[in-house]
Length: 296
Image (cartoon, rainbow, N blue to C red; front, side, top):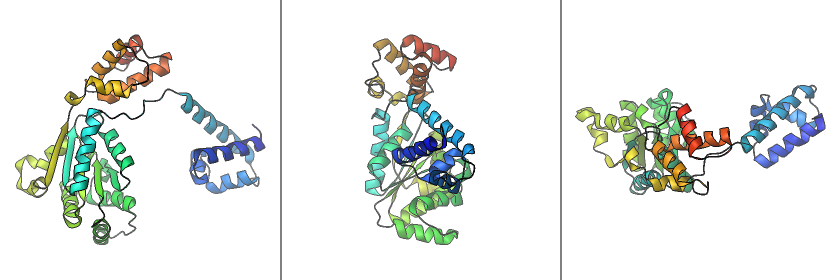
């Protein structure tokens, strides 16, 4: 690839992907200014950029050709998740969705947010479990630039009150007690619904083992929705893998995987790995991959 071909290729990639030059520069590992100069033909060392463009395009082509996970399909679990969030949204209440990992909670959340642009989704990690961490995540979503904690709270209340929005907090089991109370206060002040989503620990934390210091928030929980491995039905797997051309025996194996602690995520990962390794998905490929991944 010569300089002109590389320039045309990166322009075509920019236009077809809808990405900004800053985003593409980040993918290439160069500055936006360097990429701009390369595209305009004024960059003094184009030979250093061309291999990076070739590598990026090759990586994207390999990714495009690689087996992909099936598209979203509404399952029993995702429907339960979406219904619970909708209740919190419409009623302005606090709810909690809790249960096993890998069974479709996050997929249900994402679909709800796609269908409801006014929903606010934050995903909590241990690094953002504190009140200041959650404030940072919410401020980014709402567009608040304040740095003072008191001003952030006042601005948050002002923007959310009467907005008809809902706050969804994924991986909520990481939240501290102080943060939970902070979020309860936001809900009380604004009338905005909040839905906590996580594993079974999130419900235990909100319940507080009957401790009085958790009574304020636990008494506000209007809907409790446990979603467990037992909720997964075979028809859910049939929906997920609809159109994949799988025979009954293969579907049976995938369903068995989905009912283990690896859940639907484990079944999908096994399917994708089998397609990538063997070029086809049948019962023999599923069994082999499952054994290699120590699944089932």
